[in-house]
Length: 399
Image 1 (cartoon, rainbow, N blue to C red):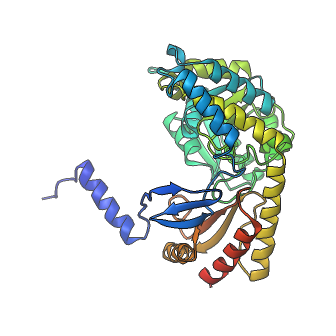
Image 2: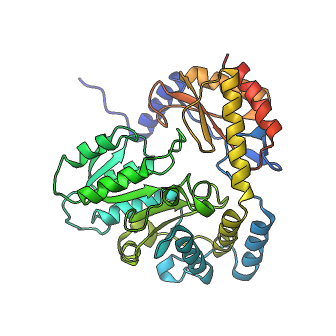
């Protein structure tokens, strides 16, 4: 007689036990904010090398002032979805600023990057409305793409094919799986756990030759790369025609929260109709949209932040090489230190915390099995002395 199947809660409990045994169980730690690059964790002040606030804008006085001023005028919530009266002047100004910055006709706001990618892919695949009967869309993706891109393709019912990381020939072979069929090729611009930049120009040429639509998730490139910080697509000098679908997030280099998809007027109007994660959610607070407009100005016109960040990245990589610390190839603020084993990564992270540095271990399934790492992220808020002390601590922790 077979034993009964576990109910959903029992299954979750069993999965948690398995994760704990494999050193893969995650936990949420409450962080008290500090000043500059410092945070307080469990009552202890640490130098934070885990933040995606690459330009140091999250506590920028002008952003804080813009948010407070707009909150006094408009309150702290939009009160409705964009289509039901929640779309305010601040949202419209932000969408115009994002389109102008990225060189696109239009932009559309989403609450998160995850929702933006899900909404865009499901709409493009014709799966945005109940009862839709579209043929499965071929969606070709880099193996190291963000989970939201992969989930979007799966939820949209796409025929999902994945190519070897950053390998254009492998992408071409996957597109050739269904020759002549419509296809979407999606890639991160900057890969969130490796820090490297996708080969966007060759991918764009491939898509042009194969009549595929290229979608780029530039969450970690926006604000950091390209002229005026317009991102990895701008750095590659690719137009709207070459990259018809551009997604960017607002909670990383811009220091706020939210996301957008930018492209042609046809794309954006189509998303307004069919992107369920846009239609059926409350609009972001208008005060946050006002603060984000100020953040875009800071990212564009305070170029010294990118210059300082570039110097810190070079300092870190040179210092790591001098100390024999292995790094992955990356020219972005994401500087992974490969460890391999999850247990060893946790131990190294704990040693760094004891030395005064917050650098969490990254383990599967966020990265592939056997590729656990310390993910060091640099910010314009760091001092060179912070980086130098971290390098010494890393050398000791990874010895």
